[in-house]
Image (cartoon, rainbow, N blue to C red; front, side, top):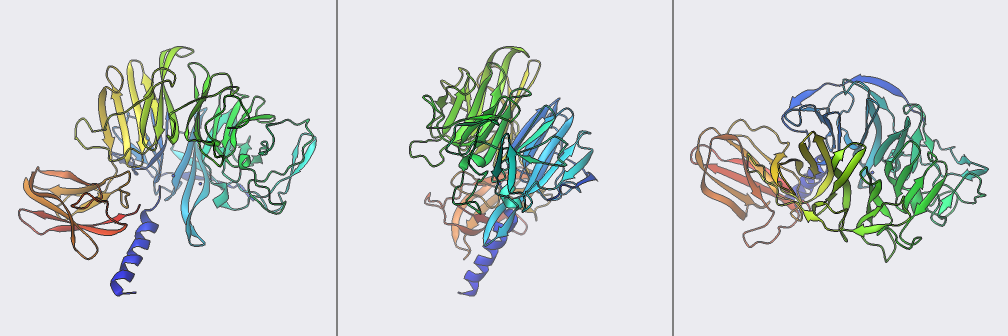
Length: 527
């Protein structure tokens, strides 16, 4: 291998390790006071979760937890604090004055980058201090579990990477976590101890403690045989009251009306009007009509398909919408007063857009291209991962999380009419010698990259993209007047002069000004 190609590979590996994070026997508690920094934006542009409670906005991001108590004007970022260090946050929940967050990071395991669960944090003083809980895992000897009249074999899931927490829900002082191969777990003592919850295996549609059962709690093939039950891999949770819990797995939707003791399962093949697919990555509850909404992805069945599934009769029948859309979250705008709602708009955050329905899912309208009403900065992706509605009197704010920024939509009159604000996290550039590109790496399939630079005075600017051999790939702008600003931004869509998407690899950009030295930056393209 030539020196040039070897350097290219090494740089690629370095970029992938540093930047490639986006949204998988003891329980010790410790107290950490968080160091907090007041910022103008969240620490990350990858927004996985949004939770709004009593006027406080909480975000779970690829750079930890963020919160705002002034509707997004300023942000407290817990990234690199003592409690959160450099962990990402995969799930958040709130109940009775306590905020919970599940943390994770990537690790290189057998040559692959694997998401590893690293535990939970909770605060009962609005984020001033945090309690840290180690990642719940099984002891190697946890091979039996009592369920009613049965003693079932249970495959111990002992490593953090298979206990990645995808969702948290709290009801009736019980903390529920959906922990991938660790399945559904619950704690009744603030996370000091955890209990695995038995769900039906793939071949049973229901279980109750008085049944005589002959299966193992086994999400993957192991010591107890080749069986691996997709319904024992948990990804999402929703509670509708103190006793009713819905759990989404890789094998369908499970419902319990007795606080997780007995279960009935709904999947693509066991009902007349079924869900679209058995892989359930999102569950939410519409308080207007008591309906359950699910992001139902294709799992393994040939007849399954991606879409949204909704039930207004407790799961007995499902209607499906947004065929082929991969939905990750739901939000609801309610009309009327709490406890007496008369209607609701439904929002769905999907990998190809943010959608809205005002007729209970019959028709959906995608949001227009999103531009910040003040800065004219465009959101450079259609890949959305979270949505939440904040209603305070007549004011309606829709908060939307994407893989390339946080969005606030302040609704003014009707459907998708109002002002947009785009929050972009990036390094500050205070002089003409500084530049910064984000997100980096980026994928031209569904993103653009923002090139940020500073101008102390108005100037003509030229920006060119070069490949690793310093050959010209694309001229973004040439001798174009740009104003005095610390936050000038130009956008590259990952295409060359002929409109073709460039191959994976390392690229450089050069910024030339009317006077002074040029500045350079580096970009990694990964498809």
